[in-house]
Length: 104
Image (cartoon, rainbow, N blue to C red; front, side, top):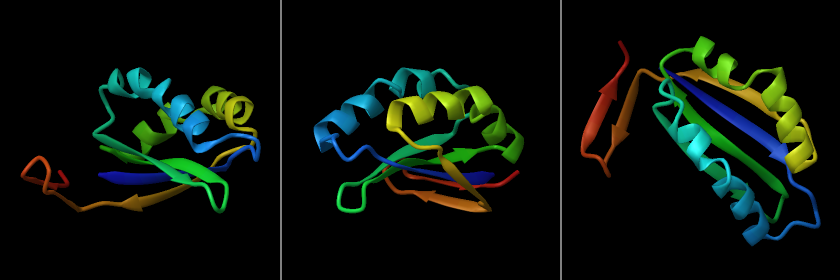
């Protein structure tokens, strides 16, 4: 599994409620991505940073979901180009679901 961290600078004129509304507008898109295992939305109002943490089966899945078209859309919506980090994720403990995910 791969954890992908996506970060972008938020517009200074957007309130937390406005940013959360922008996030909410994307939920259905991510729910319909059958390769996505999990996503958490990130918001740091003090530093003006937004983003997401995604769990994918592979890096190829992450790259496919965040292609050039997606990056251009994100830049238009949030006002900055996103940055990406990738980490191998051999184990995930999900206490809410009561499961432990292992790679493979």
